[in-house]
Amino acid sequence: MAKHSHAEKKKSAYVVDVNMGYGHSRAAYALKDLSAGEIISANDYKGIPKYDAKMWGESRKVYEAISRMKPIPVVGDFLFESLDHWQQIKKFYPRRDLSKPNLQVRQIYHMIKKGMGKHLIAKLAEDPKPFVTTFFIPAFFAEYYDYPGDIWCVTTDADISRAWAPLNPKESRIKYLASNGRVVERLKLYGVKAENIYATGFPMPKELIGGVRSPILKDLLTERLCNLDPNGIFHERYARTLKAELGPARCKKTASAHPLTLTYSVGGAGAQRALGVKILKSLKHKISRHEIRLNLMAGYRKDAIAYYRKAVADLGLKKELGTWVNVPEHASREAYFSDYNEVLKTTDILWTKPSEMSFYCGLGMAVIMAPPIGSQEEFNRVWLNYMGGGVSQNDPRYTNEWLFDWIESGGVARMAWSGYIEAPTHGTYRIEDLVLGRKSEIHPLPLIV
Image (cartoon, rainbow, N blue to C red; front, side, top):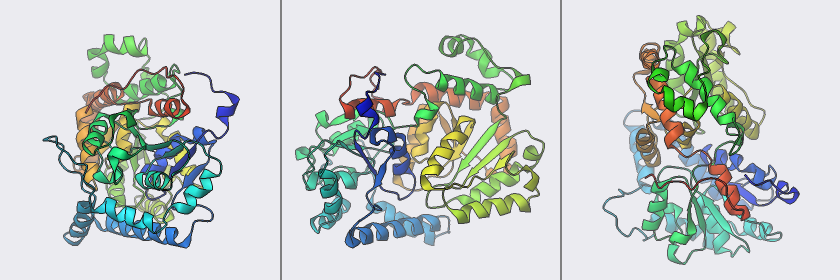
């Protein structure tokens, strides 16, 4: 990477998210260096007008309530499918013109015409800088109210609905930073001009990468592969490839850098938290024998944290809490993202629904997929399978059996390796280079769809 000037270390751009769920905020947090650490939440900032706060608040309440009801038989499925149909991603093939705005887009622009977003854009326009947002609605605000600077929109899934493209895409000046090749092609079907689409990959934490030439990513991957291949089956089969990419073999059973670690992650709406308890119950004896460490990431929800800590105590694992089973509590929403990145440094297997976390397979973490929630997560699941970096969960009640069978065979190590090789990794650096107008030292992202 080119060296950053002193000016670039200051606020070089505005980074804007919406703090509904974690996906858009997680992407924004990875880009925090662009804005000197300041992230502006379009739905929750100082001075936000009452109308704007009301519109955002109602949307958030509906989505989170229905997401939490999803596991309820019949009723939950019906309500969620109704919501999901509203933001549905249409089949990609056969390729056809999908530029006609859907109901969701028309409703968004109806609210914008009533003044939603005007205050935010006027405030930022007082000191124009590149406007980088990880959600489409703030990008629409900026364009509609003629923001006097570049407008960049970062996509956060492996495929996206028509809602991500503006009302008149062929006339739009919004520039898209696409998370993968499928999104590049999808935006073209939605009518976005090709010159406004850049394949960058999803922005992931610099703490887990280190830079273009840093050994951090490869060192962390090496540690994971050692834990995920206890019998050396994967290492023996891929010896020459591993040596060429990572250097001489460094696995030593007597000096593992960290214990075999599984991290289960709950989304921002708190759905699927019961699955974490099923995993905990199944792994109880392996945890007590110190054969695996389990992190239960409950997010920034105190009720979910209390729920998991009670489950740990009820299962007789209280003495392991904080060592072999962890349920972290976070001082703030920002601290959650920072703490999460620290946890991921020593995570070998990531168990989560196929959200934006699917892209983390590119860091060499094997992903076990919980059932998807929503149309976009269905597409993330397909993409993750396509990359070879993840697989759908087996029966969580028997995690102690099937997961260890997969590990013993070297299969989970193979998933971690496939994700690292196939999935985009350096999206954060590509995005920074584009926004700041720098020549990039990173190779172009291949159009993998």
